[in-house]
Length: 198
Length: 198
Image (cartoon, rainbow over all chains, first blue to last red; front, side, top):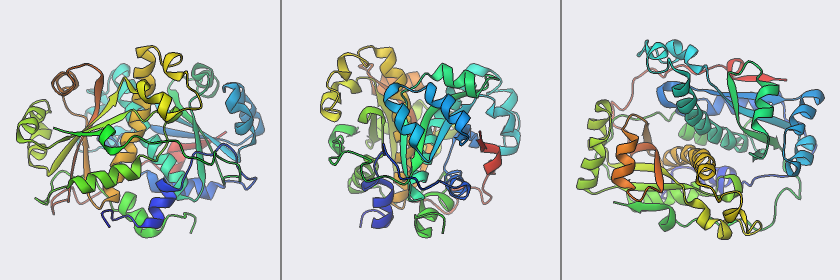
């Protein structure tokens, strides 16, 4: 046992979990999303900045608008998913820093005063959080179907008209259907291909 | 029990895990890093592209070079950590796509033919993988200390002189020392602050 994480948890989060393209009709409840968030919120970000914002697209009207911004191959599965979430970065995350990182009270007005810095650093840290969130969906016993095939400008203008957020990925969430993925898993790079020692 | 992940695993990965700034002398073995990689490699990336590359900085000479590129506040803890890893994106990840995504054999020469596209998409997906990797370190019962305070150009020129990789974060890894973190955990945004419904 080289890993401390138990085998069932390894399977749930990594080894048996798959990206889902089809879901059952079982709803994803507010309670489930809150449990996911209240777990993954603890994973680290630089300066504790937590720039990820999640938009749960629940109303039929909002779902229809979102689907219209997706590439054709992503439309039908998203229209049918129990829940779809827009994961976005808040470029104004620095407003919360005096509370989130009280040991460095001037961060908001110094290092993060300029928007281009916030866009670069915020996108990196919100993307780390997107990775945590995808694993959090799996921790709830659900499957995630993250997508990047969409018109980002269209989503941003439609869902974030104030211009302060930018979409990072759109994630379908639900209980996987029987035909949720291809039987064979795609290959992964070997350890020696991805990891080197100097 | 809203979550399927057992409570011990929740604690190990999220609730009790903390970003460590000090470590014991216990070495981090090759076997441990391989177990971490062979777990987190299964988490998803777009088109199965897997652009993350990990450089384990083990030799005293390489460690000294790396420390020289860090901000002063990160130098001493990195010089003393059992293991430090550079997490980087490979901008030439598309070369592996015909093998990694055989269903779309022309991706390498169409969508990913241009380097600016690879830099943008690769950085996003490698950053998702960096998030998975940080949780994988915790899955091994170790603590991670990710850092972004460094001269990125200096690290890139020094460790990736061919210009095909870019550092995303530098992570200290080891068994946390008694004084590894401040007693009080920094606050997290509440569910209602981070998640909205439309």
